[in-house]
Amino acid sequence: MKSGVPGRARALTAVAWMLALAAVLSACGSSASTPTAPPAASSAPPAATPTPTPAPALKVLAGDRYFGTAIGLPTLDRDAAYAALAADQFNQVTAENAMKWQPVEPTRGEFAWSGADATVAFAEANNQIVRGHTLVWHNQLPGWLTGGSFSSAELKSILKDHITTEMSRYKGKIYAWDVVNEAFNEDGTWRESIWYTGIGEEYIADALTWAHEADPAAKLYLNDYDVEAIGPKSDAWYNLIKSLQAAGVPIDGMGFQGHFDLQYPFPTDMAQNMQRFADLGLDVAITELDVRVETPATEADLATQADYYKQATEACLAVKSCVGITLWGFTDKYSWVPFTFPGKGAACLWDAKLAPKPALTAVQAALAAKA
Ligand code: XIL
Image (cartoon, rainbow, N blue to C red; front, side, top):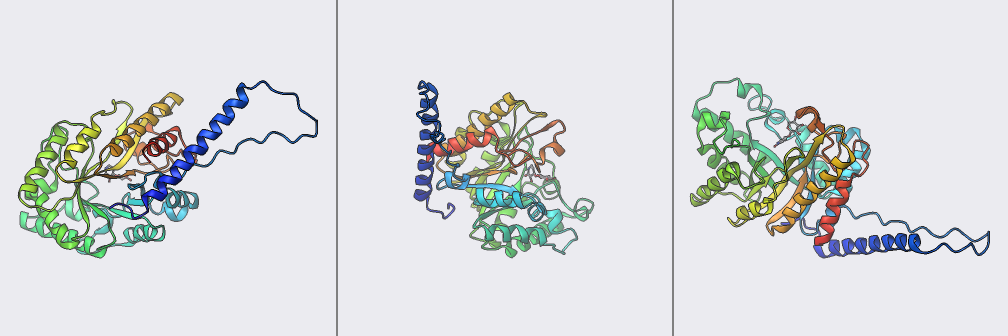
């Protein structure tokens, strides 16, 4: 891709920021270690305090990769500071919920586009690319679908219609689609979703084929959580992708959600794992990054969290075909985590008052080191 913003200009901005940061640090250091001279005259102006240069936006530091976030609606309309940060820091957005089946097709054959349209409009207004999320999933499905009783042929036609209608509406406006989300269990067996039980494993090849027909230019991704390490679940995807490719099924990328939890060690083989998918000729991306901690978070938690974010960022940067990183929300103010994982939270780069956390500095430094 990648984001269309000249990488060299961004790299220079990042280098300038690092030099400025180094100058500020050394100025602070030397005044601390130099014996204080008596003031020459009581009217002398106070010594100038160096003003720290604000860090460039994540989208600038990311160079040729994109740096994005999930965005929530109607939060964007209600919270101007949130919207401003989303516009300033990121050059890619994903609708946190607005493009999922339930909001888009709440009644069979009747489509509701307001949230999805608003997401695309925000992205266009702010020069951001959009990842479409998600077409085939077991969650956030409308009642008419989960409560219905459909033959395999009917389910296929429902699925094809949904994919074709949604992708056609945004044809040419979506950089990449998460076509299939979360198809496997932790042990690498198939998840018994409505799609798997109703159609069989061919639903994935079908979905990718229909998606390619609907928008041939969009990058088609498979996406999952707990696939960051090499293990049964990522192996299942790896083997499936190899067989899909052998059968000529269109597929462009593998998305690693990246929902981390300090309770578990960071998967230090993440870059190696992403690389093996890249070696299949795919793009790879971190699509939903956050790092949850037990709340209330201590300073030590936030320092460890910063290290997880740093390692995740470095994993992407280590893989040439890693096209970008998407945060699953950038502020603790609106994160999904406390609602889904009771007792956990504080998972984002900015806190609930939109103030930067140590993790933000860690990500900025990791990106800048690669600029
Ligand atoms: C989550 C949203 O963040 C929540 O607001 C919603 O209630 C549930 O879904 N994996 C995914 C995302 O692929 O779509 C999920 O988003 C988080 C886990």
